[in-house]
Image (tube, rainbow, N blue to C red; front, side):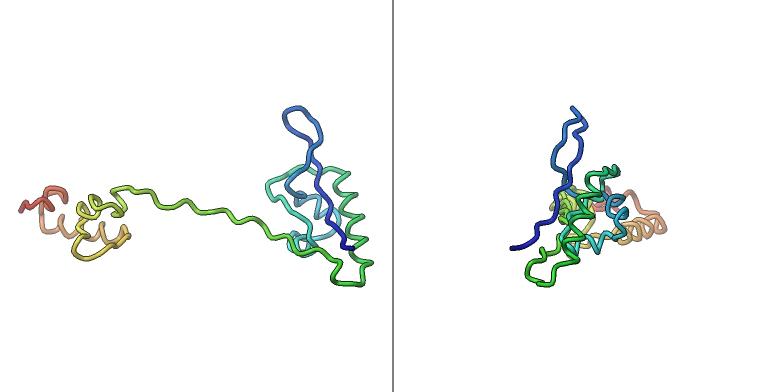
Length: 144
């Protein structure tokens, strides 16, 4: 028989009713003298965005920690709760970044490959200014 971690109960902002939360707030975890990493190792879910502290959550955490401390069999302990990873948005097909063929042509990257650095573009523009060439768009279209 394994010990299940407690469930955080929060008040709904719409109607004030109790509902199940994503995890315990950092202040609730600090109230029982634990850090966020220690709580996660004990299998306690942590919601870092929550700011509220509820006494019923603190009591539930205290009871859970007292049960876990008295356990001698390691197999009864829950697995650590790992925070969910947020996916980074993929690059969008914008011409400025040189990802699309039109953007690569405008930046002069067709023959030399894809370089996604602003420094390269700024250096090329500065070189054109020093040589007193026309604007890069006109210059790439076959101008002087």
